[in-house]
Length: 358
Image (cartoon, rainbow, N blue to C red; front, side, top):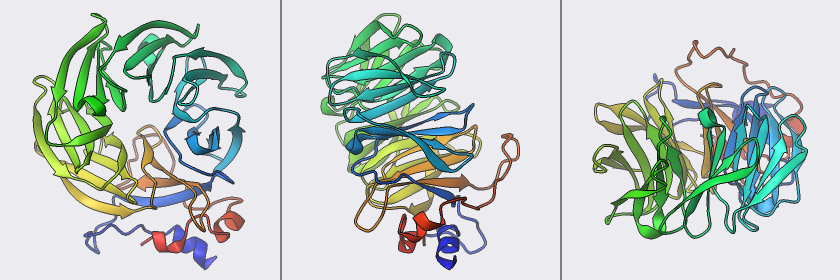
């Protein structure tokens, strides 16, 4: 019991003062079972409060019930699933797989297969355009294809100079901004014109994989791996207006708009928490996770930040559920404490070593 309580204690952020609470604390853990290999992207089904986990190295997708705090389903037999997305109107889960280039649809109620579309190769990141009931998928050696969520048919593809990584959709739906690391640029796609209309090159840094959209400040937030930097790019001019060092091997960055913060998850074994100060950001915490835990997901609606920790020597794969501080009382979610039902045996068996919580 002492070990479990230690795991659920405060995650101490480097440089944080004793009087200041950490900006993220460990709420609870969900062991993923005998899942091996790399874990890729995450998504949520908000109505059911379920987290969807692309278990790339295990050729599966895990479904985590966040209310029960356990895995309730594993969809097996996939081919290196990378991107996942849930579309609420059609009540459908979409899974993009690298090995066969497919996008498969599953019914959200019971995860029964409901069709597939083949995009060629290396189907990767998935984004949902909820207003248009469309699913956008990056794939192949340079394309973003738009799929109608109801009919599972392509409604058009936009070409790029190389394979797309992280991308974001304009809230108005016209533009798509895409990280294209092999082209050393951020591409700007115009969906109305049906083509790339600009490319914002970056000569200083490379490996631009994660991307987030700061709507309030009208800028893109792009994280580079070589060297590890976060850059803010003005949407009107395409110019980099600010940059700061981050942790290494990042694969996701998210905006917590209500707290004016960013969360950057890194395979180096950290999450950097950055806070907006005028036109800049400063790092207010570097929180220890585990090596290889570079993919994450922040849900403003649930007010929780999810980290995917892959299996390693002596540890099982798990989802870390982190609670941002200070707590927000306006998001409509009750605070559920730190009790983990039915997980004591899993944690005692070494789901996450105590040394990683410090």
